[in-house]
Image (cartoon, rainbow, N blue to C red):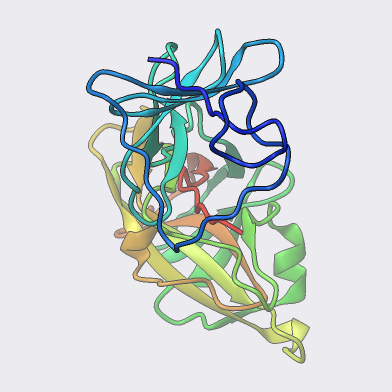
Length: 273
């Protein structure tokens, strides 16, 4: 049903011509309603006769040939309006995100032929070897000279926390050794806050888990969750490496090798501003 408004030629309502009054209309009460006939609709058209809006018996449609239909009820908090199909049905929708391929950061790789004392921590250095930081049971500081030999840290913080161990990030490790043992994969964290002495930088070791090699000279592939280190967040102004230590150690010079990557978080925080 097409509805047309009638007004007098002088601009007021109530006449018999086909034009809406040219004067502005004012309601004489706070509420006015228009009830359409069953199955009918109310169309508002432009001068060319094309629909701008169409009040149907059940919905509000906007547009003409490529119209879309608005919802009749409000959505939940933080929902947004979006099309549910190609025919123009609009609904309140919850946004979701999926990262197809997560970005990775190199967390170090190194290979060295040496004696691996029990509990001593070895970290890849910038020359493709391994730097021995000393025993995880007794070492509490390392020197600026030792730090200078290490590979680049895979995570650093300023005074602001930039995210770590939120549940979806991972540490990927490839490891092989010339001797069988159980190896601890360690998170090595140095506190470099302002005023800290460079020659005795505080260092902490956190276990991500273990790798047990039952055969020498074969690769072992494992994925570790940084949350297993027990850190809620990295300390401000810290730098972080991946290292390892042998539970028993080797009494003679043998070769060990580690490659590690940090798989960045897939979490996305949405906000509406």
